[in-house]
Amino acid sequence: MPRKNTWAAFAVSAILTLPLGGCKDTKTLQENEQLKAQVAELQKENGQLGNDLEATTAARDDLAKQNEKLKSELKAVKTKKPAKKSTHKKRRRTSATS
Image (cartoon, rainbow, N blue to C red; front, top):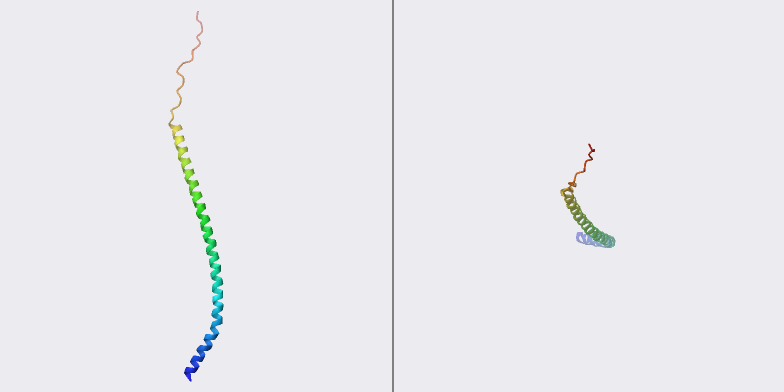
């Protein structure tokens, strides 16, 4: 008799868990679909951020080149010798002493 009760209990528990298992599968599938949508959105954002990063890096490189160019121009201006003043002297007016 104990064997019959064990099998009966097993059969009843199996029958009761099947519908619950189906609900879990439905919930799991819904959650899985939501996660897939989130992953797709994150991948899209990641691609956009990658493009933004490349553009920002290119802009930074351009600014660094411009900065170096301006520094070299500034250095050239600083090292440039000032123009020489004219060597002729002003004539002095002399009063006629006669």
